[in-house]
Image 1 (tube, rainbow, N blue to C red):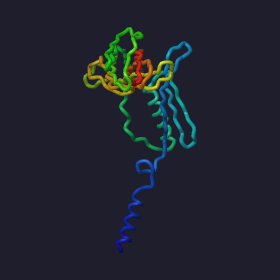
Image 2: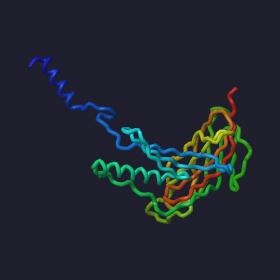
Image 3: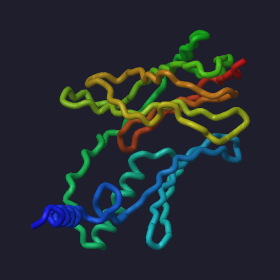
Image 4: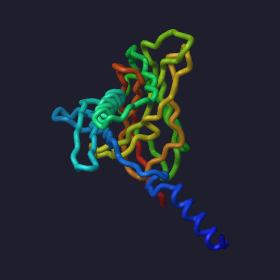
Length: 243
């Protein structure tokens, strides 16, 4: 066999070995597509409210199915999406042999924010309950600031074998004069408390905002079914334009 024929045969063999594909090298078909949207609004009594909206998209028929809760939920959307996925797999005759995810502790916890402190190049501010409107914090544009949220999780197990203190903490930022949250600074980042400890400080570091006036809300949410989060109004922040 000539060298040219050998090269052609080798090329054909390689082409046959690699499937015509998209994505990571395999022909992929969507089984389920979900969108989770956390929303906030102000009701008729001028009180801030929250809701969680989950949408299941059908890419073939361009239809959607939604489920909604009148609060910020993290466990229920996962349970709903798992149920919908199981139904889809069953309809298509696909056996789901995946090892189930470790369930979160069943015992409900109660988060309570004890204090917060903001540290910036222009100074430091510490606040404790009752949380009231404090003097506005002034920051230079493009300068970083740190936010420490001290809190307790009430109802933790005293077990030494395993920490049940998973939580999320965040700083929710709303431009003054608007009811639309624009960002959650280092929010929704899961952390664990050390075993046997129920008071902790969530360190949100090197935060930055564009120029403007903002109000802030600080939150701590335990990672346990039926638990109660805590949400408190933080300081107002003014970020000055660079001159």
